[in-house]
Length: 236
Image (cartoon, rainbow, N blue to C red):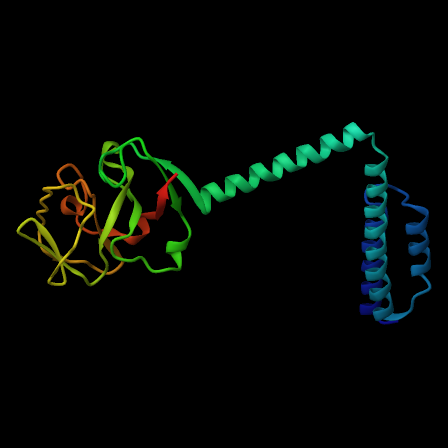
């Protein structure tokens, strides 16, 4: 028997022993029988095969014993366990969905009135904008990081310009790439004034529907795309 074979067999026996006994000095009768019969194996591959089969058998045996213990528990205990497990899984799933997929956001500002009123709650899709391109006119939730704490906030906006778009204003109307935008969602009598610019790469140009009151890209300029929190699907 070569030195390599001895090392492999010794490690296989240790691994099987750990699976059978864990921290105990003696495992189940079936597990101990597996350990004793390991000595009858020969060579490297037979030792590896016996160890793999033994570990699989021990795992199945333990799973069977746990199942028997669960079924043997009194009915109130079984019901309580299942209820606790269900509640815990539901809470975890809800947290994951709320943080990374869909979330409800309270809107404290008048930025998007009358489309979204102050005190409304909206449903935000936090996921799809990472792989589906943003589109002109979409409602998005945008995070603004200002120099002072009072200048940092998250609010809804309308996506007006994407990278490469030429944005300008004339006669109180917004023009994108030379064409006047049709904006029926604006309050009657709205006037929009802005400085002309071309939206840089990896940024977006966003305006509030309440043009007279909104702080938006007219003040800050284009905002980095990574400040887009998600798409607004509608009122919650």
